Image (cartoon, rainbow, N blue to C red; front, side, top):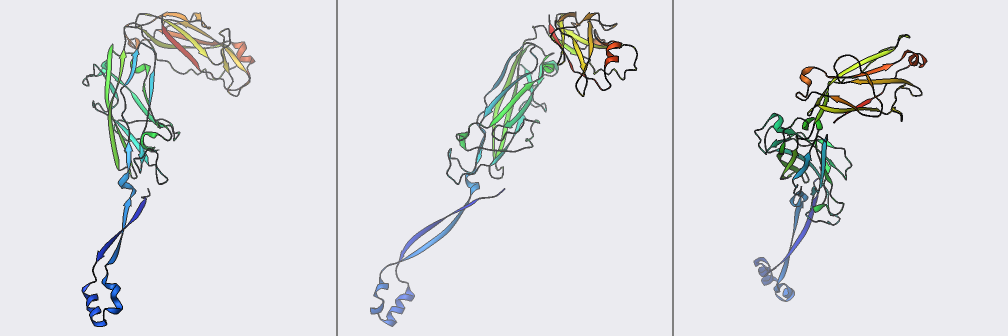
Length: 360
């Protein structure tokens, strides 16, 4: 980091009488030739005063307002953003002259509640654990730097620095964007009520990160767990292996569906699904696809007996345990017939299927 130095010259004119040595010289030489020296003379004193840019370093992170996610009622992952101004420069001026210099800055977020992470606590009680606290993720990026989001680690400064703006970001606008996010899986089992976490934003800026600023803020969310909730767990990727040249292929994928009021709807989709709801397994290299049929049953045993198309299918889930007490209660059967496999060319075939579970 360069340290910029500016100097100004201060000159002082000091009046004085001829010194004793000069008066003695006048006595010896006669006053006639040196009458002018009897007048007051002036001493010019010039001082070179150096000032470094550090003396005027300016850094400010502003005031972060409280953030509120609103009410969550089984709506999946929630996120929100806040954009503010972070200034870091060698001057407090909003619109500096040509000597103005922007300096880098870095940020960190500290939890004032302890816990070693970004938790929100039911009733703002930091002693809560389990379903009475919610884990949140916080990310940051600089809009003007066009950097990607970096996830904060609690009480640790981010790894990448950003170029700060001048005071109040009046030249180019607010530059610092924060994203707050809570996953649907994290929220799914939490108790009803309002959760709050308390945090402190720290900033380092100036020519050598020599300026430190901080500001307190809070984040809150209200969970309404009286609404029906659903959850799916225990699914795995499916590999049919290599086709031997004879016979159909079939695999049963078993999993757990939790539904707080017992009933749910399930639907399946994929990018290769056609308008009628038929599914296909595309060749990885492109060109051709193999038809594949899907069947569903709300049981952890046997094979699916209701073919899946576009419409959702009703099922009965486990209303008491989010993990079905370790016993699967739903099956999705994937099946390809022998003739379709024989007609397909050699190669790898793959597809991604998305299952959507909703309260009925």
